[in-house]
Structures are given as structure tokens and as C-alpha cells.
Length: 206
Image (cartoon, rainbow, N blue to C red; front, side):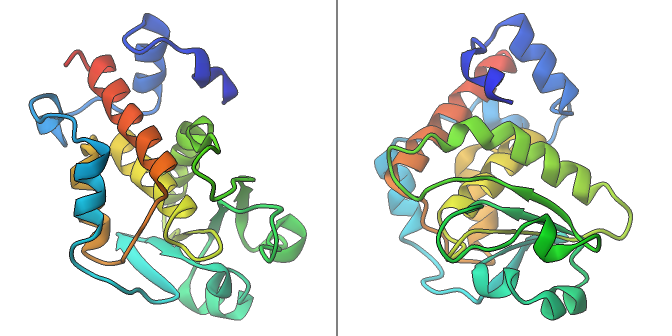
């Protein structure tokens, strides 16, 4: 999916990619008319509402956003009915998940992201969205998206999924998640999510 980095927003190749990922439809059609928020606006929104969260919260039907405590509890995941795990901190300190850890009972996808403002998490937006989308379209499936704390890296990937596959503008995606969990992507991730918002508007002809 690294090829996404050089797709020109609004180009035919980007339009084809958007359509292949199922981005056509009317859901979130207000994306085209709403103004793109500034990073300051986004940060102000993140500072409202819930100021705490559980180890894991269901932020979208069958989509759980959580931390490494939940991810490392295989019995707990079994009780929750989790069938897929997306680890946004794969290979980093304390996040030990992987195919060997979960075995054949869970479909695992690891993304080696670091919670640093200069880390390019955008290179994983579309591949993560595709993994989540396929999981949620599997009958009876539930997915846990996590990192260390479950508020920055994993939250950014969940927001990208809602923007890409459900046509939600960034602000509406944040509001949807914040109804269920406090999140706080770092400023660099917010800038990349804002750029994704702009890119998606352009590929949809806005």
C-alpha cells in the first residue's frame, strides 16, 4: 500500500482506488460542502466531551478501540468475541501481539507505527481501512484496533477508516468516536488526517 504515497489527489488512479475500496455512496455526502477544519479546530474538538476511557470501548458497531492490556488478554478477547486484531504498535515496546501470539483463532494485522508527530502514519491509512472493512463485512466478526494506550495511533487508523469507508468528514468521524471513547492523536497525526480529508474531498470531485 506504499504506492498510495505518490497518488495525486483527484487523479484517475486515485479515483479508481477510492472506488475499489467502496467509497461510492451517499453516506457523509456533506463532506463536499463542509469546510476543512484547521488543526487548531480539531484540537479544540478533541478537548471537549469525554476526558477518560476504558481499556477498550466499542466506538462503531463491532469495532473496538483499546489498549495493550486488552490486546494481551487472549481469554478476554475470546469472551468479547474478537475475531480480528489490528495492532498499530506492532513490534514496539510492550506490544507483543502477532500471529504466533494469537494463533489461528484471530486474524492479525500489525502496523509498526510510532506515536511521534513526525511519523508517517498516513502510509497505512488505506491498508488499515481495508483490513477493518473486510473484518466488519465478515459475518459474526468483531475487530479490536489497538496500540499502547488506544488514543493516538489506533485512534488515527479508526478515524481514517470512518473517513474512507463511511464518507465521514474528519470532524464527524472524531465526534462519532468521541461519543464512546476519549481519543488524542498527536498533532502530526492530526495534520495527516486533515490531509486525508482534503484528498478524499478532491477524489470525490468536491
